Amino acid sequence: MAVAEKDLKATRETTRDANQKIGGKRYNLVLPSHLYEEVQIVAKEQNTSIPDLLKRFIKIGLLVAKLSQSPDTTLIIREGGRERELMFV
Image (tube, rainbow, N blue to C red; front, side):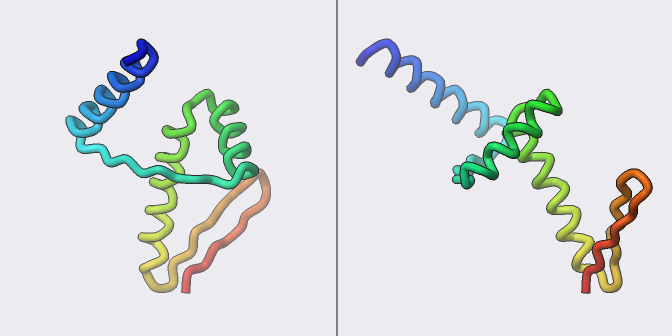
């Protein structure tokens, strides 16, 4: 086995072991190129990694999903002097 293959195998085993220790689950996600590029730009602007940024997006999405289950819930987004409301029915 070549050195690069050994390194790759060791990296995979280390990642798998770390995920098992923290109870992490792996999910492969294929994004359209234009969406990936947008995520990459935001990650760079916020000085964070793409996986960490996606984890934050998921947390926000889960909060919105939970809010949408409550009747007559409104999510208000303020941006500068503008305000937008997202109403869940």
